[in-house]
Image (cartoon, rainbow, N blue to C red; front, side):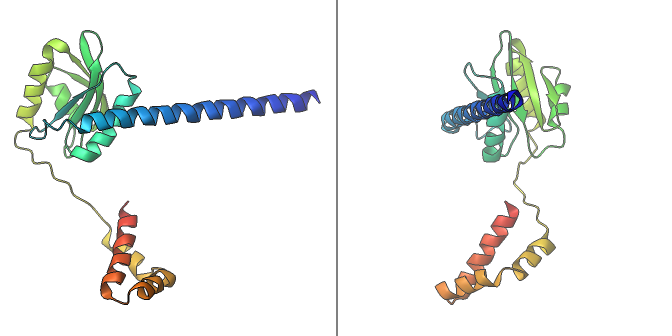
Length: 193
């Protein structure tokens, strides 16, 4: 019975920890969404090659999450930063460049630690404006475009091997080529997602 009681206590503790973890995740997601809405409303940097987003006094973990969402929206190097005393710190996210981390570090004005296109960012406040100018200058000839790579053979096989019920349903709803194309387009979008 003592063993059973211990197991029940362990199970209850595990459940409590799981619930607490889920609550923290929900709160974190909600906070990211609040900041994302506030930041997306400010699009005055659209003419810049790199974008800088300042957060208020928030947990540092949020800057990377928010950076990922903003990167999907803007498709260019960006920095999600906050005030850390005598410097700015936060996250760098990038797409379209081979090694943004190296680019940032090569300026001598800021420091990134992590991966080539996703890293922690640190810059003394005294160097920040010069850093922004250096990054814009370094990127002046870069055109950021969005490309989608797809395995055409895999997509073709997916379309050819579609479930007959799916095609039949499209034919029943509307016996037109457009309906069949819509079903195929949905399958392609699903494959690319």
